[in-house]
Each structure stands twice: as C-alpha cells, then as structure tokens.
Amino acid sequence: NAQAPQQPASPELQDKRKAFVEKLSSQGYIHKIDSGRILPQLWVTPKFVALEFDTKKAFCSAVYAYVHAIPEGGSGDSTQQLDLYHSKSGKKLGSFDSTLGLQLD
Image 1 (cartoon, helix red, strand yellow):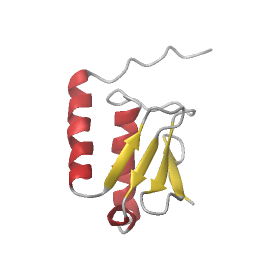
Image 2 (cartoon, rainbow, N blue to C red):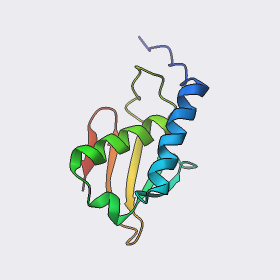
Image 3 (cartoon, helix red, strand yellow):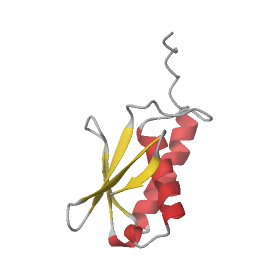
Image 4 (cartoon, rainbow, N blue to C red):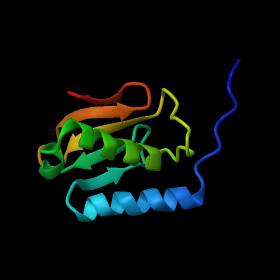
C-alpha cells in the first residue's frame, strides 16, 4: 500500500525555518544552499566544520526540513537527501536524510 503523500509544511513553519537558515548563513555557518537540483546541496564553511557533531546534525536537520518542506511532525521520504559540501575545497563532506540522519564521509 502506497502512503498518501504528505502535505507540505505550512507557510508559517517554512517562514520560521527560512529565518533560522538565514541566521545560520549570516553567522557564517552556511555558505549557500543549492536547492535547484535533484539532491539539494548544503555548502558549509570551516566554522560549520568545527562544530560538535550534534550541533551539525541539528543544523542539517533544520536545513533538510526547510529545503524539503517537511510538515511539522512529519518525516522526509527515503529518497529525500541533502548533500554537504565544503565551501573552500568543494569536497563532499557527507549527507543528511530522514532515515540515517547525518552521515559524514
């Protein structure tokens, strides 16, 4: 049985997420988000790389929910992923998804 697709997040929730993501960017943790791809990319700075794992995971979870418009209390589907790249080297650092969470290379 295929599940009915989830309704996207409310505009109000997405506005809150956008504000948080913009704050992370203005504080120098996020270089850019490239969401115009099949697998969205989160380009992070050395400041992000220096964070504790749990903080990185929380930040990635917030960006993931924003990029994929996950409804409150919902979860992404297994095909939805967010790839992480280093803003200086261009190297892939890992990925985040709703099943495995943050996986660093």
